[in-house]
Length: 84
Image 1 (cartoon, one colour):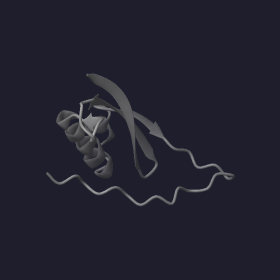
Image 2 (image 1 turned 135 degrees about the vertical axis):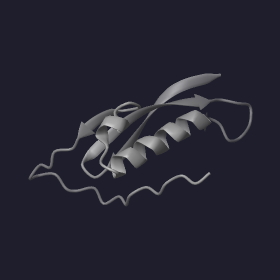
Image 3 (image 1 turned 30 degrees about the horizontal axis):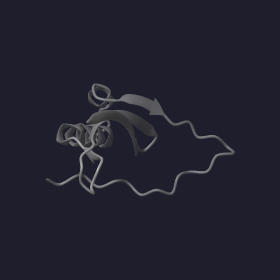
């Protein structure tokens, strides 16, 4: 059985919302992400790091974060590229 889920990626002040396919199986490591979805996530992340929002927008919905005087910056480190 498969289902669609949403993953969020953040690079700088851009947040990408990417739909991924999850596979449920009868083993302990479920759900697992579809290989095509992993490649899509990685390509969106690479495009955002390169500043190419047009390419990233082909596979994701993009949002720009707006810094608010009352908001605190996220302290999360950048995500590394997936190595296959």
